[in-house]
Length: 130
Ligand SMILES: [Zn+2]
Image 1 (cartoon, helix red, strand yellow):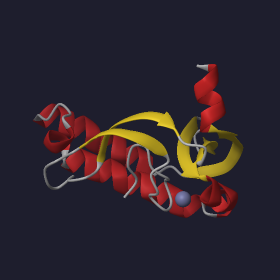
Image 2: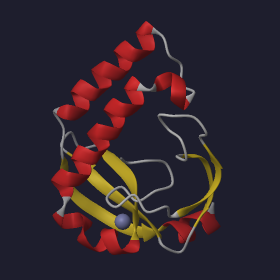
Image 3: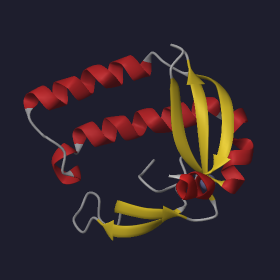
Image 4: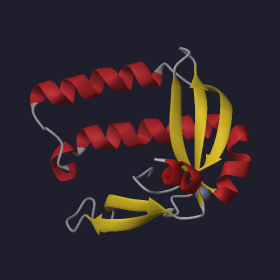
């Protein structure tokens, strides 16, 4: 499952994890992250509707990411569904309206796909500039 601070494909932690969730279903999952490690890559993708999306990968997976666009988008959808189903555990607003907005957004995303990778950058370089 795609999580904050982790590689989108292999789930390796590529940021320094500052705090973790302690309760199921998210036990041990990163909750807050600090600085990226040298292994963290930030890839920008163009989506079907012309918008762009940034995602985090480890260096190894970043090399193969341009050939795994379907798998990457499937991971994003899986995470979006999981997050909408576990709003309370994640500390997000959890009422009927919020879940409904989440469901609408997931439906929109399900019709989308990644067209291509635009570029890959080191997260550490981005971090230093910020
Ligand atoms: Zn990886």
